[in-house]
Image (tube, rainbow, N blue to C red; front, side, top):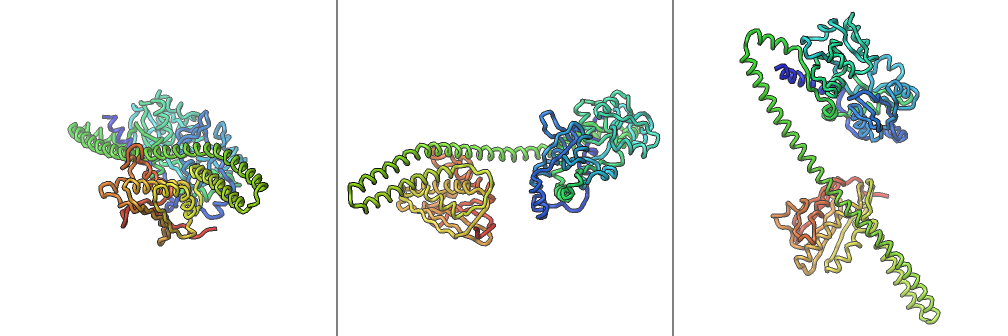
Length: 567
């Protein structure tokens, strides 16, 4: 029964920890670089990186392992703030926290990730607004008498605190005459409570919970909290004053969901006792209402069961979401790997092709030189020279175009949508001419977008190739594919329509599904249109739709219109 009451107390303390982490300080600010002013963005660009010093031995708040990996609650906050500001936080390794404080003062790092902004601290450093708050709690042995507040045990024996911590100066002010034992190590302090050498040990809740779990001290309980809270801010070197408002904006943009996600990763309270429950238990025992206790236990068990079911449903939904995200990622990697392999093959072809083309060009020039010496009809020879040089250049440019088309893109660029279409058509024109299909296009000039032009080209190539396949399979004598690009209000509208009769209503809703194909296994994998939709919607921020037009299927791509003219 005592374990059951501990579990109830656990939930209340965990809730108080999670819901008290946000420092109330006005409405949340939007995340991203757009929340910064032009001068602040310029300041960050000039800095390139923010040098960060930390306490390497303060788990679960922060820790640097032997491989130099920075971990813990504050480490997760640093990565979140780094992403919001778009600038890397570079760790400056130090052997201990005192060295980190010295480095910050000397300007060898720009910030310290977590510290209380006390008046003494602010004499030497600048500080941001608090971004993390945690109750200060005390741990006792499970055999100790349950108490209503810390004052009941403050004078019952020695109480442990961390050496040089704020609690070492705070507790004597709150509880005059208290006997404090300053410990260098929080783990050692908890072991002394477990062996009953100390009546209690005081620290912040995350550190207490983490240490109890790591050491397996099941004979300890979090007995209650103290009236004060630990408020952690980032300390900033005084010469880096512009960083303070920048960091404050990022802190203000952190949502409650983001905070809870970080805390739930590191804080899982398992044992706790709430002093109020003792009176209830004693009252029930004195009155002999054992049946009331049983009913209360059954009631709370049902509530916990319903809560567990809810958690199970949420975890199942998250699992399915991550599973789908992972499946999309794997398919994208598969497509990128195929494109990379095609690019490698085309590189080899280009390498093997170029030498014969050069030889052919030289041989042609030598023949023309000899023929000009022997023949007087230079007009025919000039025409032959121009024609042969043109064909050789076209062959060289064609292989270069295919090789560049399959080269991977690493970052988004501003590009002309018109140019993507114009560069794509020479690649598909020979196939269309071979199959007797007429390819028409109508575009507006000066339509620009920001994204991955080659990926857009690959998406269009999939659609154009599918259209030619359907026209051939259905035996359309005068096949035709029309491509149009235009502005429509605040959107870019790109349409590809064929005259192959359209898509049946039974499958039109499935054609973008992965591995769905109307072809046999030799002619298709069912990934082409799926990858096109993934590229347009996930990578390019657009939308890909299909509908049946007057003569056949039409694929419509929409992008937000960001600019209508360019350099």
